Length: 571
Ligand code: ADP
Ligand code: MG
Image (cartoon, rainbow, N blue to C red; front, top):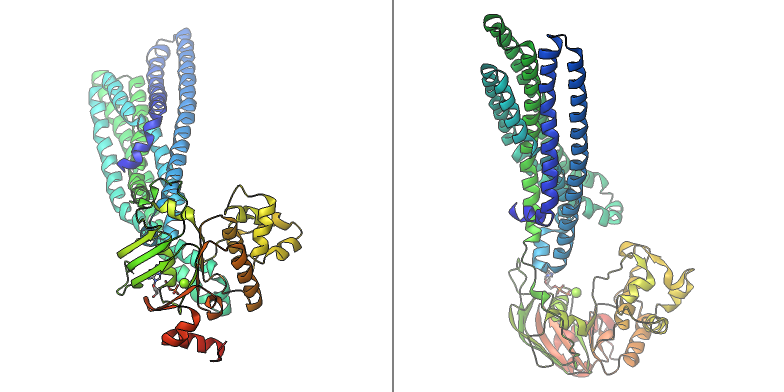
């Protein structure tokens, strides 16, 4: 909570102004019954018409001042709340970029989305409510009670008894609501999670006719969420009638006691009783507003806690500055082992690989053999559990420097909404038309792009849903080709291409990228065959290395893969 409140610091001045304005308007509200009671006491009893007119003018003036203060206060506080939320959103967004993959996995995408939408809205809602009440309460309370005391001590003491009653009722209800909100927030996360998964896999769900099943899964989460929200709201709904009841009871008691005292002692006057009843209304109203804020406060606390989870995440050490260095392209892995946090077995065990600058090497292995994990280690997405990875003989490069020097096509392709040009230029924002076309040509996608009505300005939709798997893969390759780097990394990047396209692409890459270090990760022998060196992975271990012919002789697993793909004939 403290962390979130600290976001208000830059707006201190405005916060003070808003509070001051609320205080002024509250004071004006308090003055009105006082003037009203003088009208009754002096003007009506004394039949002094000019006095009544003067008092009415004064009331009008006070009301106008109050109105001005309310408007200015509301404007300032809504500005502060909007800026405050914008700052929070910005920080969450930036933080998400620095999260390690472990933190990412632990929080989950759905939760991160809820943090930056629903949770921030809750905080802002409560913040604006608090900003309206924080100054009202003490002013109303003190002012109301002081003014009442001036009129009649006994009656004001009665008033003082009713206020705590209202307070206790509200706080008791608030306590019961707190856990309900927390639970409903957790289920909002869950609901988002299922919804996301569902939308993501909608085709598979339909193909397997699993809509009813999915409906049920979502309905379950929604039901629990709804139950909690409904219960919370029912509790909250009880607050207003209870408050009204307490207020009216107070008014009845005060009028009754007041008239009894008036008959016996001649004081208070009718005007005084009238004023005190109005004070009760004001004070009770203030207490009610405050109690709503108090009731909502736990909700905001939950939301703030969830936001803080993100903003306080450690993030990765990736933030070390990028160095200008351009790698030669030597890569050395020494006894590299990596185990995922939640896994029992390492995904990569004791792998030692030496790659010289300018070499074209392949890593081959079945699914789950640790190839993509190796890519993540090379790109410094994750750090080896044991062992070292050196580029050009040095192991302490910052992650950003390493990534600047590697142009990678990841197994999971990524297309962003925008034009084809936008997507390709991510590889090199400064590239001209000429190079753009060249990259597309090498990636075997230029014919497709040029056949489109808009060509390179063709709009892609998010995640490239208007593209086939092979088109997405080739766009990702073109993007990587456009990035001028000493090291190129292709993780299973040809898997969705037919053999002919792949052969052409390989040929283009061989000429276009000659002299650069190239690492081709694949399951196909044909993609690996012509490499300077092939590394064979099996269950996270390196089980063979050498040229195609050597491996056929020496490595049974390689021979097996080869046989399974070619039917055993020697090429
Ligand atoms: P490949 O790319 O060769 O198919 P991966 O490197 O993707 O293999 O996976 C190697 C092993 O690591 C697999 O057993 C897989 O289940 C496991 N693995 C991959 N990603 C994760 C992850 N994020 N958390 C836990 N285990 C993972
Ligand atoms: Mg893989």
